[in-house]
Image 1: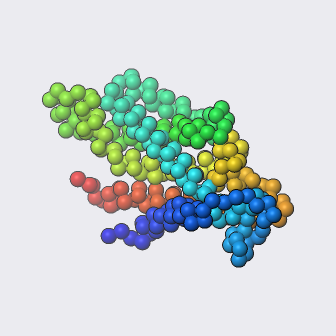
Image 2: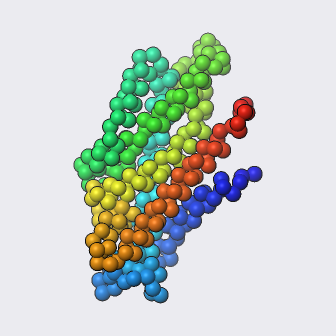
Image 3: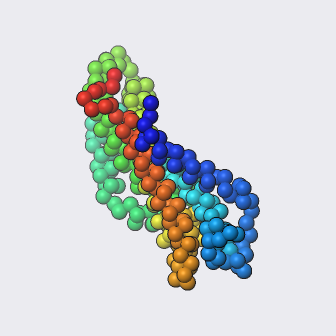
Length: 270
């Protein structure tokens, strides 16, 4: 039976996703209305409007939806790359494994944000460029975790038995090693979610991510820089709070999944 502390972050994420998808659908299509721009929170617009006259609650929900989709795609791509490279490295072993680990160390030594800015700036405004910039800088962490998990499995008797029985490296990798890291891969994917949310927001905020016309948490925060100077604090507070809640919920969900994926203290799963 799951404790409330384990379920709570997943419930928060479910609520966030429901708002991100449901609120824009309920509100329908919006059109800019500059006569209604930068209105504070009130009866007509509970969270106020932005500088284009859009309802800020709906606009933030749209931005949250896009940010979550991009972050989820980044986490999936980075995890798949990490798992494939980690499993392949252990399966081949020898000098190939050593070279792959040096590549992992090299990529980890690079400043991820700077690399992400360079990649995203080459195809500015393209969601695929943002996904590539984040996934290509975060797969090494997954590959290292997968390799560490598989080091014990490769020395286990059943792997050696499969080798002596004539099983190929591909068979061992797909039938023995890959299933052994599925749990770790799911944890890694969840851990990557808050990182991807922050990176996507940062890239869009710096102006090398999505186009300012696209609603994302990063573009909304970027546009709010000028609005705050005119006293429209809500244009920064609303997407900022949405970003904090989403990132913290993702991090808490990853932590709860990691705890439930590990055996209790003093026990070993069989």
